[in-house]
Amino acid sequence: MANNGNRWVGKRYELLTEIGHGGMSTVYLALDATLHKQWAVKEIRHIPDKEQRRFIIDGLISEANLIKTFDHPAIPRIVDLIEENGSLYIVMDYIEGETLSKVLADQGAQDEETVTSWGIQLCDVLDYLHQRNPPIVYRDMKPSNVMVTPEGTVRVIDFGIACEMPPAKGPLPQGYEARMGTPGYAAPEQYDEFGRSDARTDVYGLGALLYVMLTGKPIKGEPYDAAPLRQVLPNASAGLERVLTKAMQRDSEQRYQDCAQFAYDLEHYSDRDAKRRKTMQLKWRTFCVLCVASVVALVGGGATLAAGAVNANSNYDLKMSLAAQSSDDNAAEAYYVTAANIRPSAIDPYEGMIKRYESDGVFSASEEHQLQQTLDDHSAVLQKQGGNWGRLSFDVGKLYWYYYSVDPSKSPETGSDITAQTQYLRITAASHWMNEASKTSFKDQKLAKLYATIADFNTTIVPLINEGSDAGKYAPYFKSMNALMHMMQSNNNDVMKLSTVNTVLEALRTYSRKFRADGVTQEQLNKAIDTAQNLAQSVDSTTSKLRQAKDQATASIAPARQAVAEAFVDIAGTNGAGGAANNGGKEIRL
Image (cartoon, rainbow, N blue to C red; front, side, top):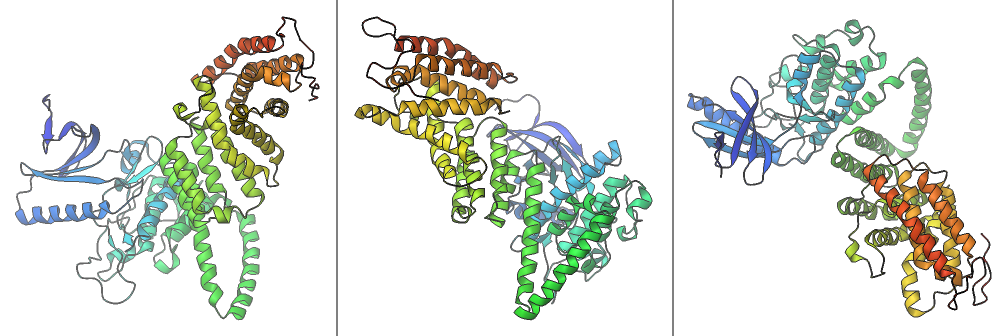
């Protein structure tokens, strides 16, 4: 282990630079010599008072043990606790970013869109804690306990006063301290010696935090005495004012009862103008009349089901919203999976995953595993969704066809180059999904059938060649490829265009003689090459992957033309250009 003058902790963590400090602690960026990974290391300096020191250490150990049970992308892990040279060191995930208190100090009040985005994300973290078994209440939601990364995602830190949620009734658990929290953010029940904190306590604290981030002014005294938002910010949205006012009600019964409801209203606060409210009131009255009739008929049983459905819908909308706005692909994937589990029949979570997976141009093995597992979990329900199932199958098929990251060594020996083998494996993997899509009536069913025909050819032609029974398969394949190229002319996806071009050119180079034997003329083959060339030239290669694919297409034009020319030279040396095959095959019409 090299010693370059930096301090070491536990003979493993090299303290590189100070990144923060407080009254009793200093935080360092550290390098793990074993894992070669960066961590944040918080040093709690020596405390002479043994009793106070023991109290602090016990609290930190309790916090670390609590966090160990969590698995949420917005909750950093504590991975090590070390006592050394009179100080205590806490090793935790390093987060690139800054606390909201620093954002407030450096930049002042934040705009509504930014603050509501943070609020929706924090609702998800708090809802995760409240759904634990046993439920956890955070109790200390304030700007200094929230970090924001450069990408705009939040992380919740410092679980020092988080605790198991006490029962709603009966004696308080032994050791439970009610009066815990930060003035200005603590809910009224946190000032009560016998108060009970629950999910609504965190709703309150988050409401106060968002209020402060919008106004740029800390709340002095009790936050439930804070002025309405638009008294401080005259241009603030009336809808957002109503949301925060409800979140910060003195009476917990008058607040949002859980963070899913809070998140839903944060996401839709701008919809709540006068016209919208009037329309919703009419709908609500109608719904209430129907509910009363249902209760009379079902003797109250349906009320519980209706409440459950509303809660499930709120959670589904929350997860979908968080997934859509997250800049972290892994976090977005986790949100989509959770949404799919909440509403198994919906295809939107899978469509969201597909959009994420194709955004970087690579559908990786780990992404495939997650998508396939989630689809398998709900396949019976999804397959009953008719056109929606067709649409989803089609989009999964395209994901495989154009973006699947494959190992070319797994391809059968075809004599093709690596790129051709990769495309063969992609098409093979997509075959099942394209055939599924082709069976269902939906907008792109005709296109799905086209893909399925091409996929079927690629997955069956090698065995047929080996058996000598491939005659008659090439003309329909040629026709399908031509049709796909013509459809791509109006497609805006350059990846799909170039992939199609390279697949067609490879087929023309490989099967020119087979096409001729099936009645495809030299003129038709050369016209297909012209179409492929024009399609490739229409692409503006703005990325290295597109440039590589376009260069491949350009380089394949001449070999394809040469292969076609050679296919129409008869054994005796006469040129059979433009003529039908010598076996008497008829020219096909496209």
